Length: 376
Image 1 (cartoon, rainbow, N blue to C red):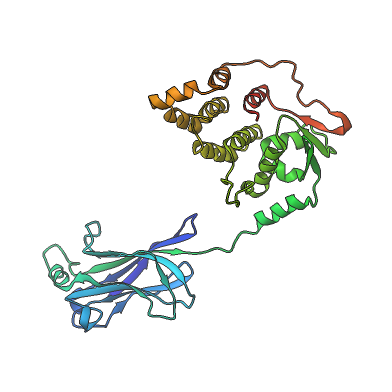
Image 2: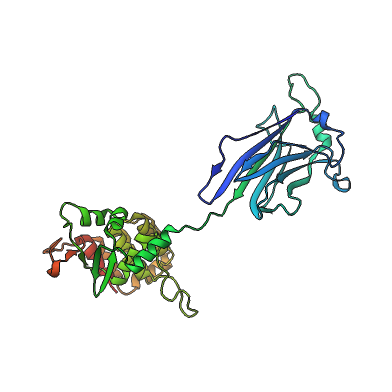
């Protein structure tokens, strides 16, 4: 009399949500009428998200005092785990007209299921019994009249255990355990791990393992970069995130990084081929555009081919009133006009051997030019 099916593969999304479509076919509604209020037919058990479920259909209604001439439909939770979050969408379709609008539907908000209470979730006034009876009358050319499909689109939210790898890598960076290279940036020294840096950055891979790299090179001098910015970048390389900004938890501090810090970090990301970090900086800078920073930010976007950031600056300056203020701002000509034309820097030695057995790694002329414009 009734059969059930499910979509071949539940879809797991990146937000740890598992979605599946559950179908419960009822072959002849007229044969189900008269079962009595509170009696139901049910689908087979479905397993979605690691939990068991079934669809229950009450042809004569759920309870005497609230059936109101309506059939009821519910999703029933059958597992023992507590506090399972799920979203339920129920609909009733004619078998021979699956593409038509549903006869009835119920789209619920997210619900928390637990076995310690009656865990059915749906609608008592789901579908009109009179309408179901009318649609079940035999008609020429409709052998499946009276056959209905109760469909449930179920989305289960699962909380995965917290990831441990990034925390372990962050601790390894902080402790310096097993470090086989030390970067000297200004007066600060940063111990690191060559293999990890090479895996994360094509530039580090070339510098540390390329044809010109010395295998026993243990110290590297980085020029043209602020130590704090290098530390932020190093933290990102190990954890895929930025460290908490100084003053983020202070009531007086505004929290977050300044526009100048994000500008410097974008330059560093471009220098070391870190495209995701570069995009993160772009998005952060888009939120920090104002009349004081738009000139430097637009020049930076031009120099480093940041289309998202450039477009945001141009939109910000599209208002005549704002553009007038920006043009009058101090340093606009210096930051914008000079950086939008080519400048030549001569006499730069790349890869020059520094004293004390350190490899001195500088920037390309293009990046060096930007740094001179954006230094604090």
